[in-house]
Image 1 (spheres, rainbow, N blue to C red):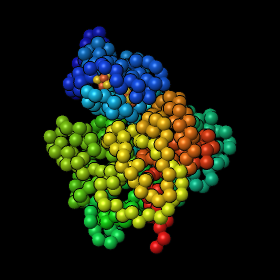
Image 2: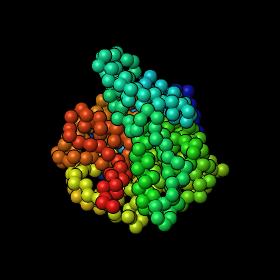
Image 3: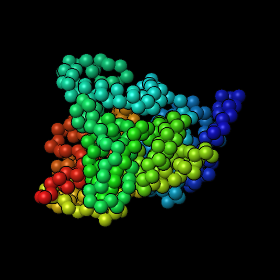
Image 4: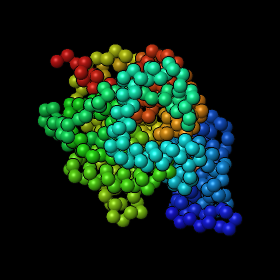
Length: 435
Ligand code: SF4
Ligand code: SF4
């Protein structure tokens, strides 16, 4: 990235390949699909408007310190619905990530998030583990109930009180369940796969990881769970901390190469999307570009992998009405939408009801529900209207962030609904079979 500061305080940034910006022909066909444009009705909060502002920045006509530029870039969800809608193949996600990387934190909350949470906690496995234990202790010891009843949460700084309300029900006990390093295939081994356990996923949803390993084993996979995995760097890439993301990517590539696995399986859509794009992240790094490419080509979302193999259909019955929320980084980031639905329809007794705007962001979007709380809650409100209209008993999604956000919506509305990862439902169906 070349940066040139002019005397008038403006900066010219070669922050991204100009051809990526020029790919946008300003047709506006993406606008009706952009959640922030639909919500705010402003061209500057649309994909076309944001790309135009990036072009102005690139040409040195506006400064990266311009409040308006920061505001509209910050408001973007990075949901990539505009990419799906764009007939010109604009790679909006790459543009946004490059723009975010040159914008300094715009609020104290964001500064703390980037400097302490993303660059320290998420890069240090011991700190991440400690954070997980503290959060599980807080929730499972009864302390959370006491704190909520005391009213102290409303007096905390940095909006910590309303963020606490987003804390999901964490799976397992105070000590989380951990998986063995190798889980043998049930029956004949057909595939050898490595499971990417994730960082938030591992701390909050360790039972979903265990269910993923069981479902894979049920389908002839020997599952390797490499020790010492690093965070995938998705939150860093989306939040502008690209150097940290690159360091994490190199650690993961080196670790997974050693497994000799055919595929690297991930059950978190946001992480999967980033892992499949390590070759973009490390494109300028001569020593790692080729290895990053090989790594990315082996990554599969769990639904994508299961739908591609001859699936063991020995499912028991689950008589439930379910609706499916497309995680943005699955449907738009990885173009995976048919596979999860196909898998759901294989479960006997299950009725799949489509909600309106299933492929529109729920407002979770990485750390968006922390940095843009009000907009995030407005998006959730709209989503929950669509969810409620289905009368479903279960909401299924393939990403921890969406599950946390949707569970918050369910709690707020006191809906009689369960939120669950697709792979947990498949695991439940296997366990419901009469043996
Ligand atoms: S991003 Fe694509 S759809 Fe949107 S205005 Fe540009 S060319 Fe048109
Ligand atoms: S990523 Fe989502 S919020 Fe951002 S411009 Fe594209 S459609 Fe709009």
